[in-house]
Image (cartoon, rainbow, N blue to C red):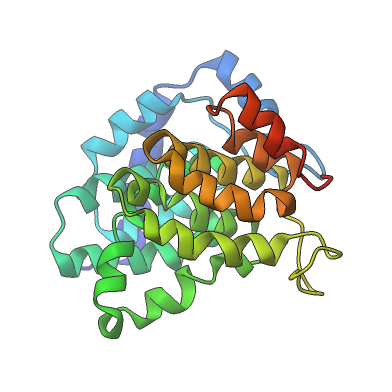
Length: 269
C-alpha cells in the first residue's frame, strides 16, 4: 500500500532515530575527514552521524521491506548514514525480488543517483543492484531501453559518482566470467577520458577523477586475477593511453617484469 508523504517521512525519521542509537562520537569526528567533506573536496558538505557500516547494515536489514517512499525520504537526508541505510535496504530487497520488482528497484536507483554521492555509497550498492542487472538488460534489450540509454552512457556523465556506478557495476560481471563485456566496455570508457592530445580522444573529453582511475584499475586487476590473458589484451592495446594511477592498480598482480614494461608505456597523469 502506498504511503502518504507524512507516513513515509515518519517511518524514515524512526529509522534515523534507530541509526542514532549507534552513534560513535569518535567516528562522528573522523568520518568527515576520511570522506573529504571540506570545501572543494569530492564529498564537500556531507554530514555524518558517526555510525559504522556494520551497524548501518544491521538497521537496513531490519527495514529491508520498507516501501520505496521511505527509502526515498532516507535518500533525501543530509546524513550520509541515512542514505547508506537506504541503499543497503535496496540491496537486501533486490536479493529476493521478482523480475518486475528488480526492474522497479533498478529504475528507482537510477532516478536517485544525485543522492548516491560518495564512493562508499556507490561501492556498497551499485555492484549488487546495477551489476546484477546488466546481463538481464543486454539479453532483453527491447524490454530495458531506459536502462540501456542511461547506464551504458554513465561513462560520459559529468558526475564522478555516475561514472563510478558505471565502473564498479562490472564487478559481478567479471566474477561470473563474462570477460567479453569488459572488452566491449573498456575502450569507449577509456577514450572518453583519455588526454586531449592522445589519438582518439574527444575534444570535450573530461579528466577521469583520481578516485575513478583507481576504480577502473581495480576492475582490471580483478579481471587479471581471473583471466590474465584478457587483461593483457587490454593492456597491450591501451596501456599507453591509461593515466598512471589506473595502470598502476591494473598491473598490481603481474610479474615485476610485466609491470615495468607496461609502466614504460603510460601517459602522464
